[in-house]
Length: 294
Image 1 (cartoon, rainbow, N blue to C red):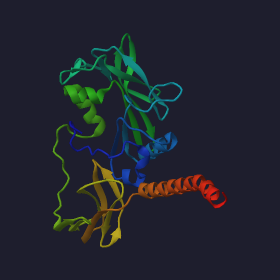
Image 2: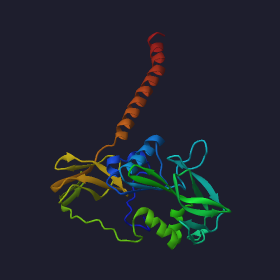
Image 3: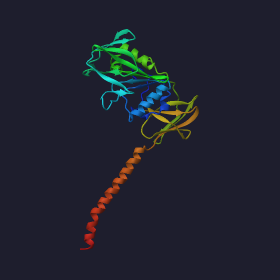
Image 4: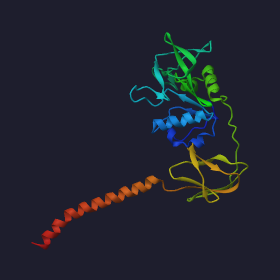
């Protein structure tokens, strides 16, 4: 997101937390340092996103490990360790270019040996690199339906972020379909009749078309948004609330209700007090009987 301001960072790293219908509004899905609760469900979500015509880009460095191989794996594509590299020579369709040397420190802090991955098992190999005397894969692609999933190795995203290597940035720009350092093109909306108090936030909002709107309020457990008194779908994006608002002029209310965890907490507290009371009665009753029958 530092290199590509148009990238929207999700609040949750778990793919399972996102509604496929919400993801479908985007052309490209970038997965970096991601997690999931259920591998099958997460892979199905990404595969269906691609089948519908989307492009997903998976950063294999730091991807969830296969429990047996102990290597990154997603959609049956693996990330083989590529260690000890100081620089990588790339081959893209016969064009030979070299990345800048991998950094030994970031901000004056040593990062040790450069740790990256070589992509293994993809349907198509797009870009190769030499490691150390063999041809390994930097970017591989799987095609699903009308779209594709690309797998990126060598810790390329981190390398581009800390070195701004022009070659690395150009490769990522092609993958994401974005221009580096381009200003965000989203339109801005005015919150009219804005008011805030302990109950939450209230304002009016006018839209020409139905849209997902990023609101300037933090998203936490229990966050709710009502439009003209009706609750609307919301999702956390960059720790803020994104809400689906229909076209027209609307009264909007943003509030925080008690999250489900509070109910569970109260239930546990009540159960604990009941057990404690039972234990106290058990110890007190023999003394009462002893006093009643000397």
